[in-house]
Amino acid sequence: MSRRALSIPPLLAFATPDGGSWGVAAGGDSAQVALATGAVREPVGSAQAEVASGQLGREASGHWEMRRAGDQIEAVEQSPDVTDEDPDPGLRIVQVSGAVEGAGIAYAGRPEVEAESVRMLFAWFPEGATVGLMAARPAKAKGQDRDELTVACLGEPPGSKVFDPRLSSTYGEEGLLHRVGLELWLGESEEADLYSLRLAGEASGAVAHLNLEDAVVQAQPFAAHSRGQSGIGVYLLIARP
Image 1 (cartoon, rainbow, N blue to C red):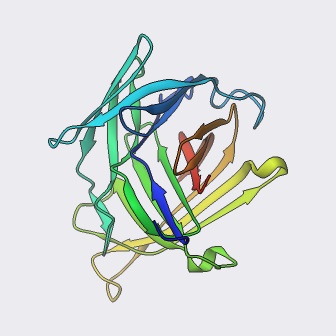
Image 2: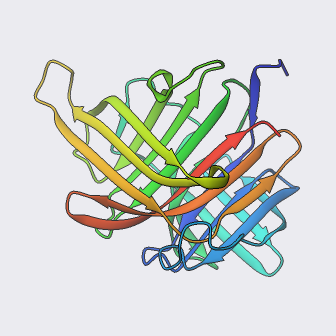
Image 3: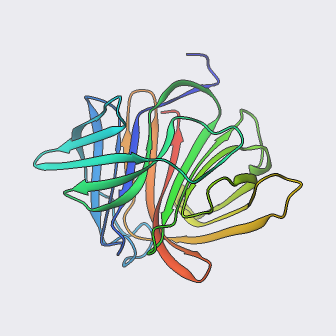
């Protein structure tokens, strides 16, 4: 792997609709897994989520399975209603069942990404609307304006595309996320009538640090707000070890 390349492991992040439980798994047969409670009920960084060894696998059919001790979670990839014009095929919105019933995102993994860091998030709302996003920060980039973004959405009119997605994030002490914002435009083409999708979120609850051989994954839950609805999400920051 080149000095500037970042290895993204297979990833699965999920939460229950009430924010009572959330989790993240990274890696394959020797994955690191965190399961936590109280996603929207505790101050940001109030605790460290317990991380344990486990397994994370994906079948060709798009079914994922995560195991940790006595916990087993299955995730099924969902076909998005809307994506950007050049989506990363590895980013998937998933429906989760088993030890946790909810939704989230999965990523199949890439051994070499020419990026300084990668951020991923999903936000899920009561009526089923879901947004999944991946943002790769090029090497030596000083701001978020140069991030390369890919987006997938559920609950939007099929046939639309995502244009001009913009992700902003604010960090506090110890590099923890405090706020996140997303703005994008949707429509059939850039020349057609476009409508906006805006999302804001405040980080809350425990933080999970997953330390792998080729990457470090920091995961935080957040309370999400969009179009007058409140939802739940998980934010991931992936960097070199």
